[in-house]
Image 1 (tube, rainbow, N blue to C red):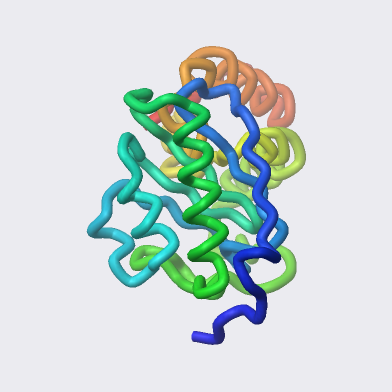
Image 2 (cartoon, rainbow, N blue to C red):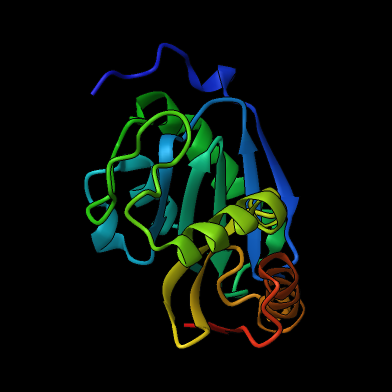
Length: 197
């Protein structure tokens, strides 16, 4: 692990609201994940990461999502929002200087630089992934979330929401409808059905 060469005073953190009322996105002026993305849903999953481990020690934290220079935190609403944001910002400032942004989560596949290699996917899945990359993912990522394809079979697409999108009321209705409509249009497939898992 190569620790970054900066101090807590060099860390700038800006909390942002997300469409999910139970999630806050924290934009940071340093990377938290150089490649890929990682979601942690329990303290046990991040024992070797002091930053994530310390965030889980904050009352009410349910899930942590790392992507590029953002951390999206899902909470249970048991704490005053201002206090929660202050505590998270404090942890990020003190832990980020010792954080390894090159870490890999236990279930994470290695990520290669450049375009994602999807040659192993079926032509249909490649087309779906490309359509999501162009249309849906930029907006979800801007809100501290993402979507992962789990399965495409019998014209039914199963997806998994990540980060702020997980458990968000709008992801189960408006966002899901948008994904289904856009994919139906992009793929010229009016019968495609999309289901969250």
